[in-house]
Each structure stands twice: as structure tokens, then as C-alpha cells.
Image (tube, rainbow, N blue to C red):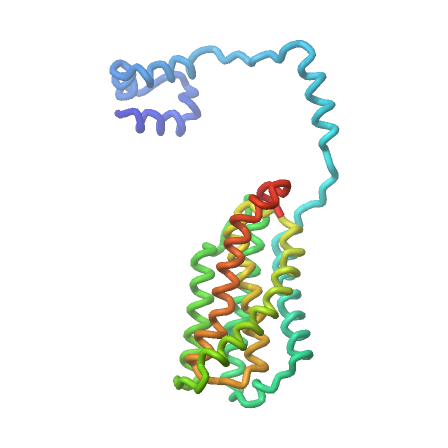
Length: 268
């Protein structure tokens, strides 16, 4: 038995609660001074440290002065519904304002195929985000795998459902689309922030990236209805690029927001 195995044994047996060690552990203690000192401490009498007189009376009032009322963290399903309701209402509101001229030129299977991918992606992100906001909630899917799967699915759907040809003024027209998509993603991110504040964000970088990705899908959804260019290169680069850019921005916000706004700590 080596030091690592001895430590594992102590962890499995609650610090050697039985106070009786197996022969191989005794042999290791005879040869290892560090583990022998550790075992001596664990097997000896444990005395509770007494607080100095008057210290307890000074601690309690200070703690009570800092206590503030808090609201209970909603159930995960409530957070999921919150994200999906905001996502759906934003897409519908934006399309009602900007129009759906692009959708009129699409085949039904093109329109339905991309919308199905967007809806599924939004649902998956809502579930994954809700799990990141409730402490000790079991993850049903790793955030990184979920994000990659959604982006790949979106790119594949655009590649397979639309013709592959490059239009004139590819960059100029594409940049206009990307700007519109980002413009719709920004208010989406701000509204998603209201849902995020209902939970405990323990990994702001992860939550920021996932929230940015979800907001970017709002932008893609609006573009899918009003963009007049239906070529795969345009859609893959300029439409699918919106959620990627938003995810990167969300990650940076989650990573550096606490530096410029230290009073928030690690919580939204």
C-alpha cells in the first residue's frame, strides 16, 4: 500500500472509523512518517475547540445584520418554460414587425425543417440552462456537447435543405443579414437575463455562452422568415454565424462581468 492508497482507504472508511487497520495499512504506516502522523491524529481523541468568551455574542449580531430576504429558486421546469416562452414570443413579435417575405419563397419542407431544428435547439438549451441554475440539479446533457450538437445540426440542415451556390455581393449582403440577426439577439439576451436572475448561476462562463447561443437562435429564427437569400453558403456563414458570435460574446460577458461589476460576486 502506498500513500495514495492509504488516503483512499481512509476516505472509504470515514477516516478509519473502526480504528482497526488491515495488515497492509499497518506495514505502510511503519514505513511512512507522514501517514503515521495523519493516522495518529485521526485515531486520537477529537476535542471541539472552544470559542473565546464573548466571541459568540459578537458573531451572531453581525450575521443577523447582513441577513436579507431571498426568494426561493424556481423548479427547473419553471425555468425551462420561462426560456421557451421568451424565445417564442420574441420570434413571433419580431416577425410580425419585420414581415415574413422570405418565407413566402421557401418550400414547405425548407421552412419546416429549419424551424424544427431551431425549436429543438431552443428546447435543449432551455433544459441545459435550467440545470445550470439550480444547485445540485443533475445534468441531463453536458453543456458543451449540447452546444456543439445544436450548431452542427443547424449547419447541416441549412447545407442539405438549400442549394449550394454563391450569390453576387456575398459579403455585403451577408453582413447586412448578420447585423439584423445580432440586432434581434441583443434584446433576447437581455430578456433571458431576467429568467437567469431567478436562479443561482454557479458557472457564469457556461451560462453566458449557452444564453448567447439561445439568443442567437432567436436572430436566426427571425432571419429565416424575412431573408430573401436562400442559398446554403449565405445561410451557413451569415445566419448560422449569428448564434456562434453570440455564444462567444456570452462567454466573455460571463468571464469578465465580475471584474467590472465585483459587487455581484459570481451570481447574477
